[in-house]
Length: 216
Image (cartoon, rainbow, N blue to C red; front, side, top):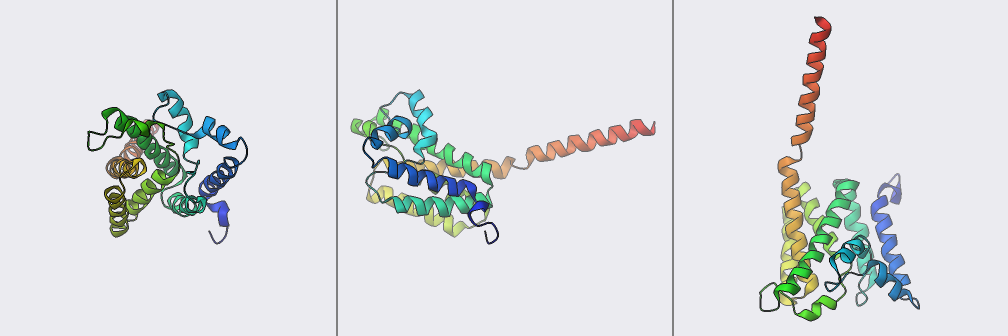
């Protein structure tokens, strides 16, 4: 960071720029309709359209929240995750947990408000965009990687408290993102070094076999 500045975290810098760009565009005349067509996801939309829009929906900030909050979250948390977890893992976790929240919204609408984790039908027409689910998930994965258990527990407690105090679509999607992030982190913990060990073993066996053939 000292040597390269923002060039050392290109993913975080690019994501922050996209959020700022979408925030500006959607407040221009005709801009909201354009952003809606390419990046706004709703549970009422057909699944294939939602899946196509999900990658960009991560960078579309909510209209009723200050954009500076989203910019600060993404730059800080994405930047730390990019350094700690790596660029590919950061991108995978961000999109996987965002997609999990998007799919959960559809399930919640289908099961209905009579279920504890269900939603009223009007939720299907609400905008389901923003980087918050990805930010929460990355915070959990970074805390797991660094063994920062107090920080991870604080994030979980905050998100659960949000759902209890103000139950809404965003809050429950944050909880889904946390669950998905924990599953990803636990899977990486268990199987992360499995295939590298297998490949190393195969490579060593190949070298031994080649050496024996050469000797013979």
